[in-house]
Image (cartoon, rainbow, N blue to C red):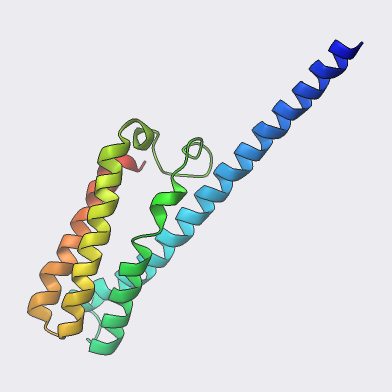
Amino acid sequence: MKKIAMLGLAGVMALGSTAALAAEAEDAIKYRQGVFSAVKWHFGTMGEVVKGKQDYNAEDFARRADIVAQLSKLPLEGFIAGSYEGDTDALPAIEQNWDKFEGGMNMFAEKADALAAAAKTGDMDQIRPAFGEVGKTCKGCHDNFKD
């Protein structure tokens, strides 16, 4: 009888662990999607300025570049085991090629910092190429790790 009770308890605990891991994965997905949504909001507005579709306001552009630089350091912790299924476009290739993915995310942060520094100069001749470099890091990850 004790063995049956212990097996039952172990089964309940295993189900609880699975549910907890699923909830953790869902939270990780929501977290990183929220960060990337904010990046898209600010980077998209800066893109309109760089393309000449929106007036350039040096203070606002620098503020947005600073925000993107800060946000660029956040998403990596949201890529955890078990978070590549469900409501996500992140591919399991991230887990299989973690070093490459992490390197790409670190490059994103580095280039975002460079954009923020360029934005502080107010010189579009420095801003445009720095903006383009950030875009390249985004594209690199999207091409390899996003569905």
